[in-house]
Length: 227
Image 1 (cartoon, rainbow, N blue to C red):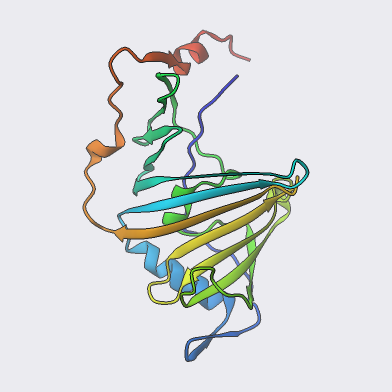
Image 2: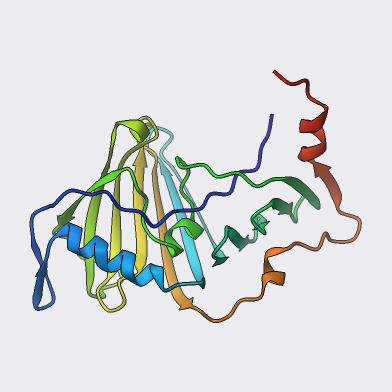
């Protein structure tokens, strides 16, 4: 059955110590960098940003890219908008609107720890990964600390490796690159990030456009026999 899944990210870290690397004038370990990221995101109640997502399929040799905006607020509220789709959740209900089909799918909100998307990286970094500092430069040319994250066994069947670029000025995540077990490479770049602007809860509910087709997956689920 087709499902709609939006995921949130808990700001929890369980990384071991890693080799130190210079970030500006202060040498920090990977663990210390993650602590600064955690401290920063603990102060965030809401955030918004522009994002670009690029997916490269290794074996098909095809690359797809699109851009949009993302907003989030604590207690699992998200809104992701692009030309292809608008995805909204208030923490209880998920709406997925396709302008091309003029169709809205409605579902119950669920979390999936194995899915990655732009809104996840506005609230921190994933748990269940080990971190190490790497010597790299951010593509945008800004000062950044780069971490390579390797999955622990419980998520290894989904993600092969991940790299994150953390802004040295405010310790926010600005770019994420991950490779899955099929060698598909996905890159999320975030810019124009705004924190704690006081986003209204109304932004995280969706008004169904006039004459749009509504497919309520919650009602379908209720009709299924219990296992």
